Amino acid sequence: MKGKFITVEGTEGVGKTTNIQCIAQWLDERGIAYIATREPGGTALGEKIRDLLLDKDNTGMAASAELLLMFAARAQHLEEKIIPALEAGTWVLCDRFTDATYAYQGFGRGLNLEHIERLETLVQGDLHPDFTLILDIDPELGMSRARTRGELDRFESEAIEFFHRVRAGYRERASDNPSRYCRVDAAAPLAVVQQHIVAALNTFVGEG
Ligand code: T5A
View 1 (cartoon, rainbow, N blue to C red):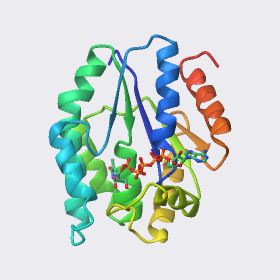
View 2: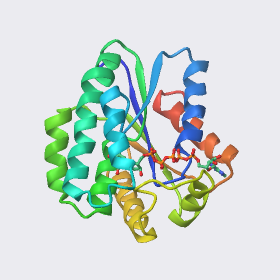
View 3: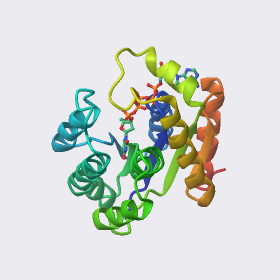
View 4: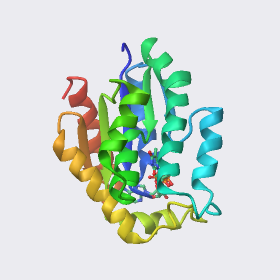
């Protein structure tokens, strides 16, 4: 792929949306062409699937149905948006990707990680992000930030123990593959968080 694929991950209210703006600015300053997108979502079909996934009326959704919907949205996203952009040399900046599936459906819901790996191979082949920023925060603090934005969605309505498992999943993935992941303490003041993010990006492109 000619473009680079950057993903941003973390538990609820960790500051992904806020810090994606910082990464977008870093790309703009270098004149790098990019698209910003998100999962679940990113395409018309994917956004409809997102609505189903986040709708808290869907309380009875089976964990395996949730997993398959995540990958259905991802398959569309890859074919319609991500792969064409990367092939054209455009960078892709994505708010969540498959690490979220391992963390939420694998570690959070307790689904078999090998099953997730098989779906990942089926849907992505050997395409993986080049750089993944994991914003790490105590879920209690993240949820207190998320609550300030209003009504909670189906995931945000989970018990706090769920998010502790999700966080542990992200940490494990980051420590297993330090060359792809950068874990940043997202409880720090925003300016400090963004200094770390810029330093990590500079290192990623060999400017650090
Ligand atoms: N999901 C997703 C899965 O289960 N499996 C999958 O495979 C995928 C792809 C939707 C849900 O889907 C699940 C996970 C999610 O539950 P989402 O909408 O991306 O995904 O998830 P949210 O975590 O809900 O995203 P949000 O946009 O709601 O939260 P953000 O973007 O992390 O947080 P943000 O930037 O809005 O910040 C929250 C507040 O904190 C402040 C901000 O100003 C804002 O008010 N803030 C800070 N305050 C102080 N200090 C800092 N350092 C701060 N950083 C931010």
